[in-house]
Image 1 (cartoon, rainbow, N blue to C red):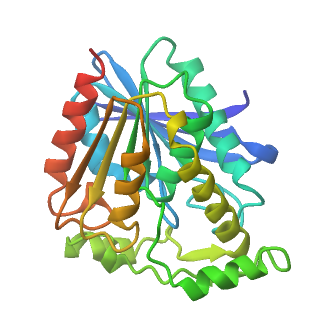
Image 2 (cartoon, rainbow, N blue to C red):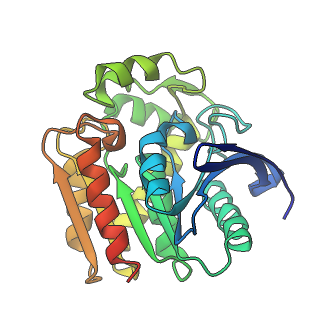
Length: 288
């Protein structure tokens, strides 16, 4: 697989940045973090709509301190990856991009257990992928997965209508940074982030709705351990949607934790340390 990379060492963390080839020949940005001690497993993170792989600093620091390696990438149309902001031709591009990253990680991290972690739209991407291609994964973690979203029904309807006529037509999602976290300092930082965007296109709306419908029709296909972490006050990925999905999944090794007052970005909310402890406990249990 073609890739370009460079490394740097900061403190006790080895950080690497590079590119890998995704669907349609897109050169997508990725980065990885490794402890200088022995790495016991790898966690691959998929971010949500409008953000990028840098927003998981709290998770990365926690996992590195517990001897996990971490990989993250910027989705096409996001962050440092190319493409129109918030646009895809089809959902299969997300799926193939993730497959390409997993192949890269498997080549670089032979024989290490792999966990997939998806947040928001990244949770939808990770869940769709895992339902279809799950054999290589040790477990799936979903943080506030986007299954039913707090976006204006009118905007969604417009997107569905325009998808065939003007697939690249973009609207502001209307999702403000204030709904991401109760931490005012993080909200301020997010609002000033030059890599963040608030665009969603007509085609993305159609592909998202079709994918969510497929997921909700096939929960019985999940055959890997599952952890869902959900903010009870999440106004973006509505809590009842992950609750309903959880109830439909028949695989026995599943767990869902809801934090009643937490907002959308659990890993950047006021109680993020509590969330990370729960994440760490689950990971340790599933390494044994």
